[in-house]
Length: 629
Image 1 (cartoon, rainbow, N blue to C red):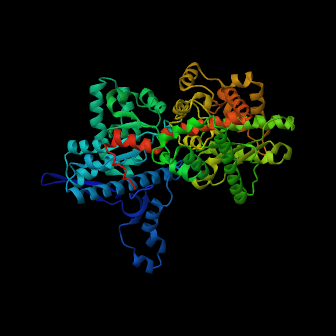
Image 2 (image 1 turned 90 degrees about the vertical axis):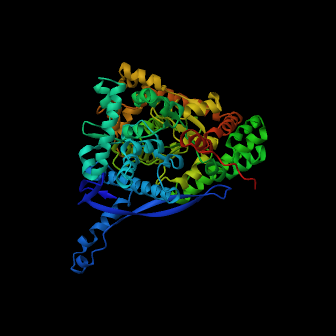
């Protein structure tokens, strides 16, 4: 694949031939991992790529002592595939991200085309034999890259190539957050990917003519729909225009896409939009990660749920079986002890396993509102500072998260949680009833121990922002009870398990929009809620010697919009949900019955159903019958 330089166009024998002058060229070397299916003879190939220079190592320069110049091309190649998703809050990071995205997309597309040609000998039937799915906008360059391959290498006409591409490619949107709806500076894009820029410009011009016919005279709307406008290349628009299907990942999210983000595209292409609610690998997150619960399910309903997860619903008939409820409670205790032992061994932190394990495992982002959770914890901390003998059940709040290195506010929220935890540890009497743990290097191996131990699942994003999430499903299938907003998959989880088995709080997506329309003033909530004001004021005092007045200012004055994710607006309702959860926890039978209902209702959220939806509605694949062993 080629980067930079100049594109030379030359007509020969009635064909446009493309060559490159200057710039850099790299090869992609495949590294394959074989992934076996559960209880199956099928093996899938996960292909990874490593970059290397096309030119040979310059021994002459090396022999002359010019070691750096001799190694330059090798080093540049290594950088491409060294660290995925580098920080992009500077030009170098943006350039590397763009280089990575094109490198990986081009390598994969060339590999797909090569394998297809080896079997079929032509590309006319590519849409019938291959599906290329864009998972968010990061691989969106596959659309112009496929066009490049078909036009430049196989000499297809534009219209024929575009028909093949759009019938092959589909797009899943995973978030409405602006940073995920990628845009690139057009000058940077053209400099790094000159041929791809030419193709994207042509796609944009042809689409703009189509949009003009649909929205005649409406320049503002056509500009908003364009791939290239105001010096920016918009990858989400490219993804929609170049795909035959576009889906969100929960019903609410898909509705938001067609009502707001992609509303005008939806009017043009109503048959293109659909929904596929996310799913989880339940054989990993239940059967493997929670073997004791799996054994209980095997006893109660048989092993059929392992391959037919909808059969988990049969577990509901045991909701009044005292022996089963007691077993469920014992399994949760064992899982808490297992996670506590792991944490003690890894970090030296010793947890009280009789306390409630309240877990928020989310990417650290303002809209996911770890800050709202922290504000509530600060309130509990201040209550206990005032009266260490307060009669409350011990609570352990556990956070697991990662954030982009350049995300300044995320770093401040992490620092707040860690300093709050440190301050609590300095007060042994308070630590008997309140603990906070921020897990270092949070990863899948840790999650496999943590999730089965969780009792409360924090799913508290501002309504309208969380596309779906899957942590909520992993926690649900392991019997944790959700404290959450009506956002993302929480809406469908509530329908599956019953409103009485979750703790829903806060503004709905419609109410959020209405509040913004009226003009949100966070200071009003601060002024009207004495407890909330005390918490926000204490940020100016800080924890463990660290002052957090910047976060207090962020909540009350900005910069920009104060409290942009409505932590203060939802605070009192959120606190009420916690009070209700603690009240339910005082009644073990009720709590365990609710936990069982969540497990029984989780079958819909298995990836088996999700992948079947994709295969049937988007990829056009039929399912092979399962062979009897």
